[in-house]
Length: 436
Image (cartoon, rainbow, N blue to C red):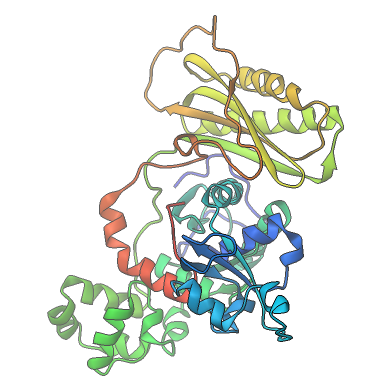
């Protein structure tokens, strides 16, 4: 695996004994996004509902904050039942109920969640050479070329802190020599957790855990394992692989290996990216034109360098501008053909930014999209199109076909991970509505 020019932490040498994998899992992500938009919800019970409309009682719980879970609200639960356990804020007071057990209910706003997810993803791609996005709120990172085991915990904390500082949402991170253990570690100390499982300690870490914690064991599989007298990961690791294969097929052997800490899968991206971008938030909203231009110039240079490192040409250059409270605006310009021209990225980005010269801005970003990875002649730049308005006022976002670093779907891998995602949803309390 090449470093691609990525920076390393002090103490990183050239020799590698074990792969270093991070699993980054956002905590109650939909609820965290709602709190980002409404800071007054911090610390309050928050329920986000699918098919739910303000003031209604239909739909199902997509995610519930930890405060809401304390009152028995769970993912996939009917909103009507959730309201019985946790009355809606305002309704209880009107009815004369003086109970403190009231919560805030919000409908799913997937476009807004995607925009926040993209901000997180930009950080992950900046911190690792290889990133595998699993869903809107989780991803694997192979950071073997970025750090070493002696400083892996510090690097993981750096990733967590960047997400919290630059995006404003909490994440839990698991660090381990393989994907399955890293995923378990990220869930081990939620919320806002950081768990490091060093090489040589994996099996001891897994052994006391319930078998349902093993990556790939869903509720149905867990029940069948219990019927076989297998209650813990240690039991599964000590089990007869032939008996497991008879019951579950080849997957039985695979689960046996994972319980023993054996997982040699590599972190691989899902297809090539459709776009590349960098974003940066200001300490506080600014209307300083020069400060905004300087930041965009830096981001544009970084994006162009990233595209060159990946041998990617681009046909579209765009900027993202976030104004208070969290209104997202995008502008982009299409070229007549693919190019690899860093100076052009800077020039176009600054030109598009000029529309917001007098606005107070919280965050800016630069993106190149419509990527092409084959070797072709660059197209003449004469007569490229005027800026295209792709704006979503309020809490919207640009169209999904130009999402940052979005990847081609991989149906076979998605099917293979179905049981795994079911396990994660049951533990995280969040129902996945779309891919990352």
